[in-house]
Image 1 (cartoon, rainbow, N blue to C red):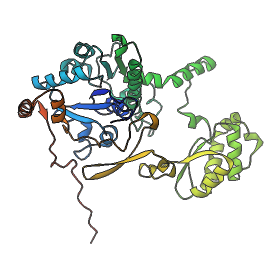
Image 2 (cartoon, rainbow, N blue to C red; image 1 turned 90 degrees about the vertical axis):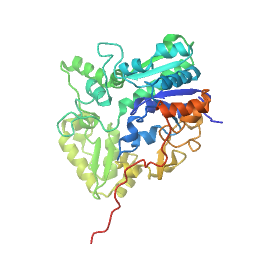
Image 3 (cartoon, rainbow, N blue to C red; image 1 turned 120 degrees about the horizontal axis):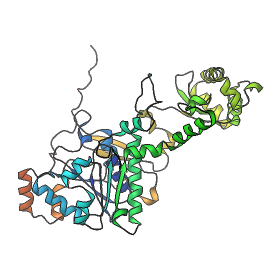
Image 4 (tube, rainbow, N blue to C red; image 1 turned 180 degrees about the vertical axis):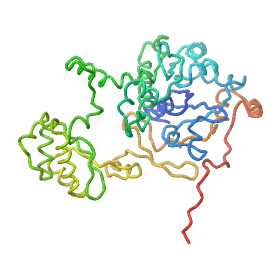
Length: 409
């Protein structure tokens, strides 16, 4: 029997890309059974890398069961309605228009199940844009994050889809709160906007610029902490590796100087003074770091208690001793491929990661789920023949594999 604090709860997901699948990934790790409803073409992340599943699909869909339904077909809609009637929670990130078209609204689901907890992750919450579609980079652009992120002079999105994942976390908070509530319709109808999520994430910076406007009479905003505090950032060592240093205080600066042999000059003793001499201090730190290979520098900084780490490429992250310690990473196989995935760091509350299934094939659990909903074998066969539901083609390759490399002649 599945463990975890949400064991026994059934979640229906109509998710695509990241926000809703990430939310239900968290719910699954907490022990809920997640049934992922997908259209006949599969959800978007199944076809993003060489015609096959992307890292997002592999990371956030492990342990779910896939029910492939055409919700525009009468039989597909009937199966969906039976499932909602028996479920505990619905999570989706369909556009508002698609949700209305497919009957995936709180009103429709609540009519089928008056105890359902319903969570819609959408582009915008209530307001003039509430019916518009928004994605992670749009939320970044609209809430101030992108304006100062200009790696080549042009505003650009951050790498990971943090707003999607934050929205997924907020969705889980909402679901958990609803489970503990009096279950009024208002408490069970949860809406999470990516835009509103972005506003909340940006609260520190939004208030910071208000503070500076009132103190200085102008809307001054530093691009980030590392640009405003010299010695805070990434610096290259003599062997081409990068050390990220955190020097927020005068004590941090003194420890760095002691570790690297930099003269602790009195005129640079205070943060205010170092900020005034930013270019000089940056040159001092860069020169000091570049005088050591990374391993030697690491030893010196550790002795003095300086905050730092190596800036790692993705292919080395899970090889770090800290990543390997304890039960932080689980291995699973998917098709002919082997993967290692980081786990939710809440082990006492979670289901066993090792016991979870790998990500499902498209429609892998369609037949058994339809049977559990009361559809007989003849009905299931008829639904399959009509295209209202789908089971997987297990012989089809998941990815278009690259050609093997041959040695140069």
